[in-house]
Image (cartoon, rainbow, N blue to C red; front, side):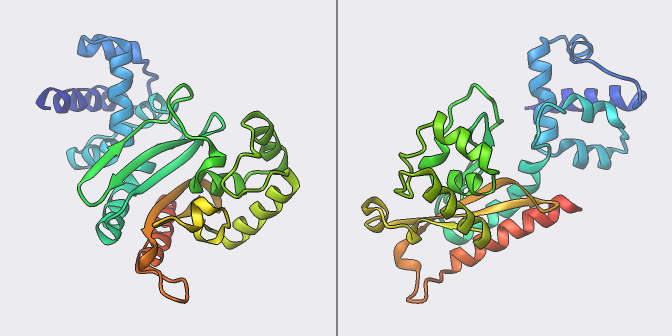
Length: 253
C-alpha cells in the first residue's frame, strides 16, 4: 500500500513540474520502473478514486491537463469517486444491494457495487469484461429507456430483446413501455406483471444519473417487498431517488 501511495505522489510531482507538456504512459512507466499496462492501471485508479482532485489539491500540486489526458480513456472519470460516499450512505440506509452501472458495448457494466453497509466493489468499464444483458435487469431497462429508437432496435435485434423482464416480445410494445419509464424517470420491477417479479421477495428499483440533463449511468437498489406500504412508498425508495439526484448535482459542481 505504501508503494502505491509513493507512486501516486511521484506521478503527481512529475506531471505538475510541466503541466502543459504532453506525457505518455511509457514515460510514467519508465519513471516508476514498471510496465506501461501497470502505469495505466495506476493512472486509472488515481482518476477514478479521486486522488487527482483530493490528494493533488491538498499537496498543492497543479497537474494541469496532462494527467487528465492520460485518463481520457475512461468516459466515467470521477463518477465512482463522486458517487461512492452517496452510495455508502444509501446502502447503510436500506442495507441491501446497491449498484452503479453504465452501458458499455451494448451491455450493462457495473462501476460500483455495495452489499449491505460493509462490502464495496469498484470496477472499471471494459468492452471485453463480464456484463449483464440490458434487457434482463432493471438498471439495464432504465438505460435502454433513454436511448433513441435506432439504438434500441439495434440492441433488441443483437441481444434477442424479446427475452426481456418486461415480458414484451414485440419491439413496438417494448419501445412504448420504455417511453413511459423515461417519462417517469425511474424503473420499478414491482410495476411489471411477469410471475418471476410478482412473486419476488425483493423489488428492483432504478434511477438515472444525469449530467447536464443527459443520463450517463443508472443507480439500482434491491428493496424488500415488505418495506413498501399500501401506497407503494418505502423509505429506501425515497432515499434511492435522492441519492441519484445528489450524484447528479455533484457532477455539475
